[in-house]
Length: 154
Image (tube, rainbow, N blue to C red; front, side, top):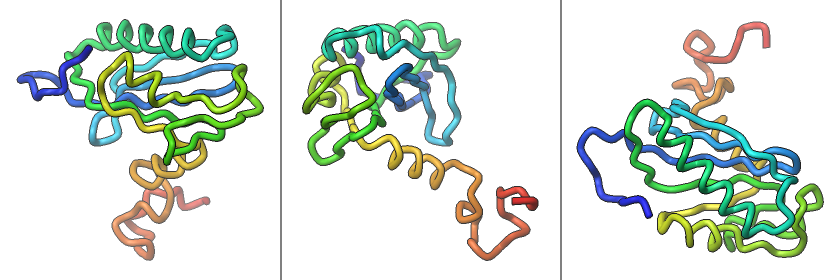
């Protein structure tokens, strides 16, 4: 289990996870939205969700150790098709190899002991774009086109 206390010299990060039907991608993200390290695993290699979660967690630990800087994981955010943020579950996702209601937050929390949030992947993408993306409405003012990060040709 990774300690959640603040430790000197460690970079505080969240681990963002995108579960897809073929691949699952993850990254270590700091408060400024910088991805410090990341990797992928094949989702469809695992017939059981519990085995998938264990393999994913192990890959996250190995990748974190290779990051080149000491990381302090504060929590995990998981985006997945049919993710239910209120229950921490994935529910009846057609594109995933597992069926029914999957208690992903609880399963992942058993490995980490840290906060785990599960949400719909489209909602996770929208929040990420809102917070760190290049949409016009992420500029300091929605009407200030001179300071917008949106390309002028868009």
